[in-house]
Structure formats: C-alpha cells, structure tokens
Length: 388
Ligand code: GLA
Image (cartoon, rainbow, N blue to C red):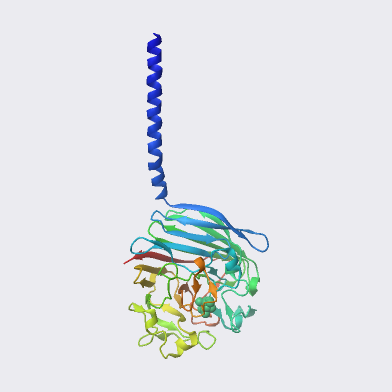
C-alpha cells in the first residue's frame, strides 16, 4: 500500500513537471505572436516650460512599421518604414528630445492650424466683420500664427479602431485665440493600419462662424535617416493646375495650367530635374513651395506619390482635400541638427500638405473654408508606405 502511495505521488510529480514544461514551451510561442501584433505604448518625453508632462506614444503595426507621436503640437517625431530589403529606418525629420521642438523649428511633424498655409496680411472678413491675425511671415499670416496648433498641448488617448491601432488627439482652441473667432473643438485621429497606412481624420466644431484649414506638416526623406537631400526623389502630383503666388507667397487668385512648366508632375519626375529652371514661380518660392489643385473631384483620391530609388521606398498620399502644398524644404539651411546628429541641410526634407488653397478666406472663387456652428469640419488624408 505504502509502495502504491509513493508510486502515485511519484507519477503525479512527473506529470505536473511535464505539464509545466509544456507551459514553458508554449509561452515563447505566444510571445512571438504578440510581437507580430499591433501595439500602442506610452513613455515620458519630458516637460514643457510650464511643467506639463509630455508623453511619447508609439504605435506599431503587425509589419513593424512604427509611428511616434507626442502631446506637443500633435507632432509625429518618428516614422519607421522598411526599405526594399526590409530594413526599418526613420523617414521623417525631427529631434531626439522635446528641447529641439521647443526652439524655433519649422513645423517638423506637427498638425498646423487653425489655418494651415498663408492668409494675406492676416486679415479676413466674416459677415462683414474684419478679423486680424498675427502677421508672422513677411507681413502675412502663416500656419495659425505665433502660437498655432503646432505649439500647443494636445490631449491624447488610445482610440478603438477597426482599421488598426489609433490615437485620438484633442484640443480646444478658445474664442479669439490667435485672433480667430469661435471656440473650436478639434479632434484628430491618427490610425496606423496593418495595411501600412498612416491615416489621419480631422474633425472640428465651433460655436461661432469661423475658418478652418488643418494639415500635417511632416517632412519626409525616404532615403531613411536623412542620408542626403530629397532632389533625387521622384514625384507624381495628380494635378493639372497650380495656385500661383505673388512675391509674399500669397495666391494671385488665378489657377494656371501646369502644361509645359516645371510644375507639371503628372508623370513621375525627379524633383531636382527642373527645380533651378528660370521660372518666375520657382524664383518666388525659392524652389517648390506651392499649392496644386487636385484634378479629381472624388471624395478621397490619390493626390501624390513619391519614389526614392536607392531605398525603393514608395509613399502615396490620398486625401479628401482639394489641394496639396508641395514644399521642397527650401528654408532648411543646415542650421538645425536633428535626430541622430544629422544636420538638416538645404532640401533635406519634403512636405506634402493636403489642404484648402492658401488665402481662401479672401478668394471667394476658391472652395470655402468657413465653418458654421452646427456643422462638422471633416477631412481625411492617408500616407501609404510600400516599396518597389
Ligand atoms: C510651409 C510654407 C513654407 C515654409 C514652411 C516652413 O510649407 O509654405 O513657406 O514656411 O511651411 O518653413
């Protein structure tokens, strides 16, 4: 009997050991699955001068694409995408720490608003009443003013999405902030899909008639970690017309045909091929710094694509907006040192800012940017990453 008890005990110990082993073996397998699953994590990114804590949120999709976002300016500080060999590298300009973003920076990675782009002399009228905004760019208003949406604290929370991992960023822009009428409730959704897209959904509501034109100001350099300038990138813009500007970069009001000009990107063209051509618009912009009129009237359409031959990276931009500002980084001059100690020299990044045309509040023929109480401003833009 005693022998039987000892034997039974012995067998059950062996059995439980075997089961434990099984659990241990299963655990790493489960971990492997977890790594390939999309995720969102949060860490500290320092403090603003007023003591407010800034966090960095890291979104990862199942293919390893990684997008980092901070509360300050709704800034995308890093975006890692694979090259043709699968090597993940950062394809946006920015800084390693919060301090970099707090020194005057040219809107790296930020949401710009309340009005992205320029408004002539910073003045516009609504129902006969004139409003005056900051003249922060050559006597004109640019990107929301002295303290635009790129320089404010955004609340961030993880948001449910059927399309991928997502963050909801919200900001209340108070009545008359930077001179704009109406309390504007802004909501921006950043979604990273398993289809390798960064999808942005902008929404806003107001309690007084106002103007809104929100965009994203990321500087892309598809070489990865900004190895050289963007002049060898090949660009396609699905636009037959340009919004030409005057000497302070305010639209003249015409929409001109791009045919036979250096602004015709309807067929994929190397950015550097014509950038130094003798052309009045190129001289005014010091390169490309213009808004194109998107040809398709579809609600969401392919607006632009960029191909970088050495890495094989390919970026497509889809939007519901009527225009796209292509800025070739003309004001970058090497005075800013960015991530990993890389000096951001002339034309080291390019922006593709989907938006309504500049100075629309003063150009009645341009699509309207007016938002009334009871309406919801709603636009979307998707940046899609692949290789070829
Ligand atoms: C926008 C403008 C440019 C420049 C950059 C920031 O793209 O159109 O003229 O101001 O922002 O440097």
